[in-house]
Image 1 (cartoon, rainbow, N blue to C red):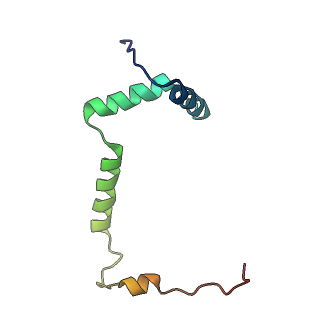
Image 2: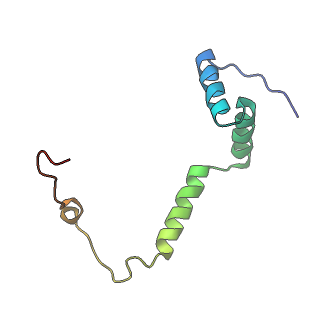
Amino acid sequence: MTNLTIAIDETIVRKARIRAINEGTSVSARVREFLSDYAQGNDRQQIAGEAFIAAARRSKANSEGAAWTREDAHDRPYPSPGAA
């Protein structure tokens, strides 16, 4: 394994260490994971977005072709004042 020296703001490193501890990992492990994904061209958000779109296209949820308008989406009852 190769060591890599980078310059990062101390505040960012401190916050990253705290977050890593809370997640049961280390900053080094997270950086390795990021660089591995980056080097391989993996973009998790892009992959997740494509998977969502593919699932939506396969969905039969609107098989009858129902159409919604903006008014339909915003037409909902509001709670009366004082109701919790």
